[in-house]
Image 1: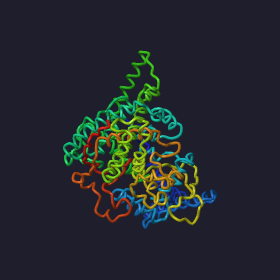
Image 2 (image 1 turned 90 degrees about the horizontal axis):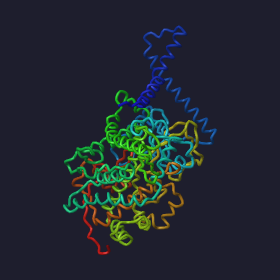
Image 3 (image 1 turned 60 degrees about the horizontal axis):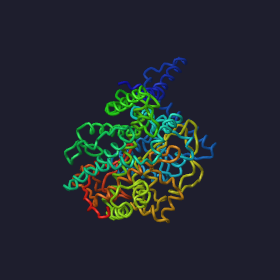
Length: 597
C-alpha cells in the first residue's frame, strides 16, 4: 500500500540536517578555497566550529528579530525556560520522564510554578515551543484571535498517515468544507438517536447485569468504548461494528495494554492499532520537530494504519457500490435519509478522503464519550453520596422509563455531574495550535500568578502553542481553593456558578470558537441517556483494585502529593485522548426495580 505523503517528514528533516550540519562546513570550504587557505589537519575542528558558530549566530539573529518585533508590537517576550545543559536538554529529559511516569501533567504544572507564569517558552534545542495553562491565552488562540492560528504544519506532519485529510487535520477552506459537510449530522436532535441509544444501552446492560449477578468485576472503560463505537457506527455509517458481541477482557488472562487488557480477536487487533497510533503521535509531539530522526527508515504508524484500513475500507467500498447501484436505479435520498458515510460518498468518490473523514469522526465518537462515561463511573464509585443523589433525581424525573429529550433537559444534577467530570477530566486534556507565518501578540495573562507588567506577550510566527484544558479547568485562581475536588454542586449553587458564567471560556472541554466541537450535543445526549439507564438498573459501583493491573495502581508516593494526586484511586493517562491506565475495573450491584413503572 502506497503512502505518498509519507515522505514529507523525511524531506523536511533532511533539509534541516543539511541546513544545520552540512551547509556551514560547505560554506567554510568554499571560503577557504576562494581565499587559498589550506586547513590541513585542522579541517575536522574547523568544520565542527563552523557548525557551532553558525548555530549560535542563527539563534542570536532570531532572538534579535524577536526582540525587535516585540518592541514594535508593544509586547514583551514570553518567559523562557533556562536549563543547565545546552538547548535545555536537561529540562526536556526531566519533562519527558515526568509526563511518562508521574501524575498527569504534574510536570507541566511544576514548570509553570517554578517560573511563576502560565505561558512558557520551553526553547528545547533552541526552538521556540510554547506551553500554556492560561485561560486568557487559550481563549485568544481558540476564539478571539482565531485567525492568527491554525492546526499548522507540525501537526499535519505528525498525523498525516493516521488522520490524513480529515476534519481534525486540516485548516482553512478544506476544514470549512469538512465542517459544513458534517454539521447536519451532529447539530440536530433526532428522535432516532434516542432509539439507537436504547438499543445499545440495553445490550451493554445485559453484559453488566450478567457480571453483577456473579459479583464479577468488569473493565467498564473497554465496555464503554464498545458501546460508543457500535452506536456511532450504526448512526453515522449505517453498519453496526458489533463489538459488544465479541469476547470481553478478563482479569489477568487477556493481553496487557496501556488502556487495559485487550482481547486476542479482530476487535482487540483494531483497539491495539487505534490506540498505538495515538500513543505514537503523542510521543512524536513530545519529542518535538526532531521526531523524524527516529523514523527515517521506518514510519512506525504504517503497520497500524494498515490494520485500521482493513476495517474501514470495506465500509467505504460498500457505500460507494450502493451509491452506484442507487444511481443506476434512479433512486435519490435527501440528507435526512442518509447516513454520514452516504453523505460523504455523495460528495466524493475518493476512497482516501472518505476514509480519513470516517477515522476522524470515529476517534471523536468512540474516545470522548467513552472517556466521559468511564470517569463518571469512577466518581460514582468513589462518591456514593453523589450516586444516591443522582439516582433520586432520575427516579423523580424519569421513573423507570427510558428518558426523552425533554426529560433529560430537566435533569439538572445529571448535567452538573457530567460537567464536573468534564472539568476535572476533559477527554482532550492537551491540544495544540500553531501561529501563522506572521507574528502576533497574546493578551495579558490571567491572574494565576502576580506579574510585573500587563503588556501583551509576543508570539513568534510559525510557532507551536500547546495548551492544557485540564490544567486550566483545575486552576484554583479561576475555580476557587477547592478546584481539585469533585463537587457537582458548584454547577448548581448560584454563587459558585457565577465564576463560570462570568468567564465561560475557563470551561472548554469541547473547545471554543469556530472549531468548537460540532458533536457536543450528541455527546451530552448519549452520555445522559446512558447514565439515566445506568442509575435505573444499578445501585452500587465499587472499584476492584484486586484485579486492576499492578502497574496501573497509583504509586504510594502519590499519597504525599498535592491536589488530586493525593487521593486519586486510579492512574489517569493521556495519549491524544484521556483514559484510565490499565482500564477501570468495577463491580456493580443491581438495582431493585421500583413500582413506579
